[in-house]
Image 1 (cartoon, chains in turn brown, cyan):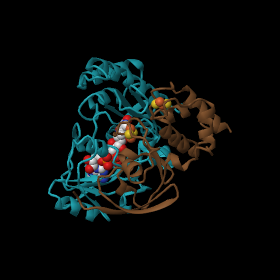
Image 2: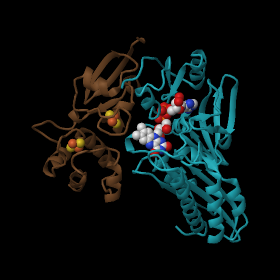
Image 3: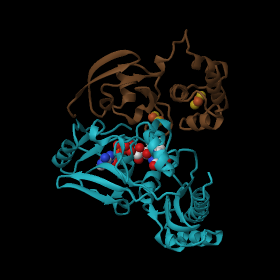
Image 4: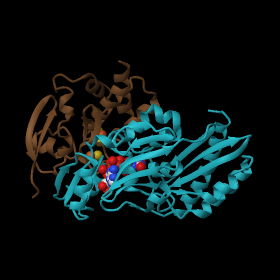
Length: 155
Length: 290
Ligand SMILES: Cc1cc2nc3c(=O)[nH]c(=O)nc-3n(C[C@H](O)[C@H](O)[C@H](O)COP(=O)(O)OP(=O)(O)OC[C@H]3O[C@@H](n4cnc5c(N)ncnc54)[C@H](O)[C@@H]3O)c2cc1C
Ligand code: FES
Ligand code: FES
C-alpha cells in the first residue's frame, strides 16, 4: 500500500484533517469515511452523474476526483442543502413536482441544478435541458425534473 | 472498480513535474483535471507507480495576449475556455467547440492540455488545435520545444510527447481580419464524443477565398486537416459546387471506424454533410453575416 497523505477538507462546513490513501476516490471518502451516503455511486467513470458534488462551488464528479486532489477544498454534498424536516427550496420543488421516483439520481440532479442555478438564473429551456443532460435518470423520463428546476429558477 | 494503488506527488513547478516524471522511469503519470485519466484508473487500464499532480502549478494557468496571438495555459479548464471573453473575441470557433465537450461537471475539471495529451480521436479540442495551427509548448529534461499541432497528434491516444515531457502552454496565432468560421458536430447524445465533427475558417479578400482551413475529427485515428480540400477551395468563388467537391475530397481522405455507435459508411456520409455546413456558415460569417 502506498504511503498515506494528509488532507484538510471542509465538507458541508465541517473541517476534516485526515490521512488517506492516494487512490481513495472523493466519492468513497464521503461515503465510507464520513458516512455521508447521500452521494451515490453509479458508474465510476463520469457518465451517470449520481456522484456529483460541489467543489469550491462548482459541480464535479466525485468518482473522477481523488480525495488528495481536493486537499484544501470546500465540498458541498446533498446533505449540505437541507434536512429532511427542512428541505431547501430546490428540494422542495423536486417534491412538489414529483421529480424523483427511486431517488438514485436525485442527489446528483440536485447538485448539478444547484451549480446551474448559481451561474445562470435565467436559463432558456434549452440551456436547462442541456445543463441537466449529463445526469442520467432511469425512472422519471426527466420531464418532472426539468419542471422542478424551472420552478426553482422562477421562484 | 477502484483505482490500483499508487504514490502521489503534488508538483510545485514545471521543473519539479519533469524531474518526478524522469525519476519514475516511465512508470509515472501526470494528472491535470483527471477527467480522462481517472476513468482509465477506475477501469484499471493503467497502473502507474506514481501520480504527479500538476493541478497546482501557477505557471500552467491563464490566457494572455502575446502580440501575434493568444497563449493559453495547459491547465486552462474547459469551462474557462468557454467563458473567456478573449477567446470569444479572437477564436469564436473555439468557444463554440468547447460547448460540445462533455457536461458541465466534467468541463469544470477537464483541461485544454489534458485533452490534447489524451488525444482521443473523436475529441473536439485536438481538432481545434489542428484547425487553429496551435503551437504546443512543451518542457522536458532537454529544455523547451514547440510542436506544431499537426505534428503533435500521431494516432489514437498517441502524441509526439516524450515520456518526461509536459505540455505547458498552447499558443494560437491570430487569424486574418474578416475570417468567418463554422463548427458542426453530430453525437448520439448531447455531451458525447463526436460521431463526426468538422470545423472551418474562411478568410476573404475581394470576395474570393484567400485563406481556408478545414479540420475533421471522429473519422480517423487522429484529428486531420484536409489540405487537398483546402487547396481546391483556395482562390475559388465560394459557390456550392466547390463546396460539394470539397466534401467529396474529405469523404475520400478519411478512414473512419465502425463501432456500436455508428458504421464507417455512416460516419463517412456524415462528415461530407458537415463539411458542407461548416463551409456555408464560414462563408456567411466571412461576408459579415452572423
Ligand atoms: C463522461 C465524460 C464525457 C466526456 N466527453 C468528452 C467529449 O465529448 N469530448 C472531449 O473532447 N472530451 C470528453 N471527455 C474528456 C474530457 O474532455 C477530459 O477533460 C480531457 O480529455 C482530459 O483532460 P484532463 O485535464 O481531465 O486530463 P487528465 O485526465 O488529467 O489527463 C489525461 C492524459 O493527459 C496527460 N496530461 C494531462 N495534462 C498534461 C500536460 N500538461 N502535459 C503532459 N501530459 C498531460 C495525463 O498524464 C493523462 O495521460 C469526457 C470525459 C468524461 C468523463
Ligand atoms: S458514479 Fe460518478 S458519474 Fe457515475
Ligand atoms: S428517480 Fe430513479 S433514477 Fe432518477
